[in-house]
Length: 299
Image (cartoon, rainbow, N blue to C red; front, top):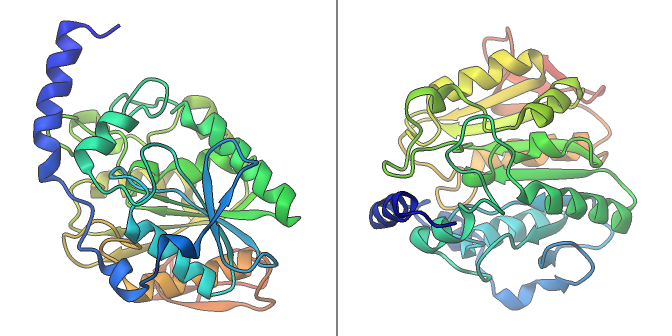
């Protein structure tokens, strides 16, 4: 039920949301193309667009709060050009939608995303789990998942669904609706329900976290909490600056190259180890390596 208090809070949040964008449209400039580059996939729990060779290993791109934007589709296109079979599920809105206000109102509902509550499970995960299972069934191989912003931490909640590679880009949930950034206890919170967090802890899958070190929507306290929780399973790319959307709107070439190499090794495309360019792990003083055993190592 929409109470007066909830209505007022939503209205104020909606007024503030247009001030918070998700990047400078760099991905769409680097990897231009058309909506017609993609194929509609009709047998998954969510409407899904596909691009890349059907024989490639499956990678699922989870879009950001403005919607499945042209920058998110450009990231999918770039991954397809690297040989991956890429799937982009539509969680709300319409393809190529790019509105923070509209996306917030569509996404931050009790039946989709828990955007502000501490340690809460987002209901959209039930359908995303089905997408992961469906892509696995289509490709015959374990899959990779890239989450960004609103969906940044969600790959960790999907590891039990044939996910063998996870990339967390600027995880933003939970955040304060009125300010558009995490505040108080939110800054340390991982944005996962207790059961999902426990399952993620039990998983052996090493993952990659990418963020801009001055991004207030993904505060350093949250990055530290993820590192403290998962220890040697996480390698981190901390990009300089106050930008936000590391692989889409504020696309970074070097972070993308590291992400591609990580996905290649984890999903069995690459048979040997790959040296990271900027990703750092554990005790190493410099960039790390994803080894032949498909785990992180110092160089």
